[in-house]
Image (tube, rainbow, N blue to C red):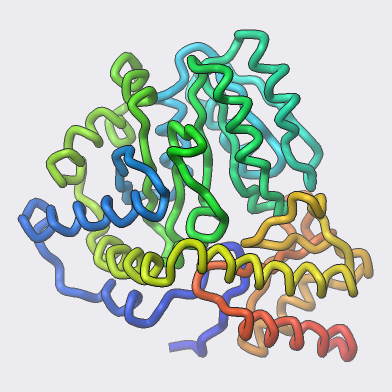
Length: 358
């Protein structure tokens, strides 16, 4: 086994040893009563983490799969894609690739979506669905989801679909209070599991739309998925190792308590942001800087790839910038099971490299 490199990247992230060990459990029949009890337990705990009474669907896919599912099940006429970075852009591209009509409401990378602009766009009556990321992983921007939700309440015929891939389990989020119709997340970020699994909550409004939808395919047909989920069954053969691990990790999350977990993430983010402001600059608008990932503007013109390699040799890993902002930025994730002590150690290591580049 190679030496352990502690991950401070926006996913995959660190996994608790007892959770990781469960992925090596012997297999069971996915149609057994034991598997049904496992699925029921996961869905119940996940709903508590999401603060929802809506059904929770499980998917042996990345979050991108459920993004496509949201488009295929939820868009009848035209989607409004709120774009502020690479992953909100991806959801727009998925809509077009699925043959749906979609328009972008776009802001420059590093800025958050303006709820007033959303209101103006929806007032045209052109749209029946909105897609947005709560937390844009590529830029370290946390969109003002509560303010956007207030706008959405004015438009009862428009579905509110939210990517919480890098926020669920790390940022304050209450699905039902926000009126979210589709809340989707992968497990490899703030939920702190290995990648390859995702989950979503689905509202009655979304399911009504899904029952009318044509051309949904099979794998991400929410009606089929929900029909099975109501019997505590998966639609297709699931990743049982992920389910064993997810049940235990959700129990850990709920034992910590959501308020305490959110506060821990905020504490780590505050530490990183202060460090960044003393040495570099934030890429994200400071008023909307994320509590799960900080995107650092490379204001000193350092060789980011060299920094990444130096830290890896010390047993820690951060991320270069994403896409067009590679080398212009780098990202430090502070999410999942990381602690303020972990963050202190990382920042000290970066300081050593800045003082004495390898």
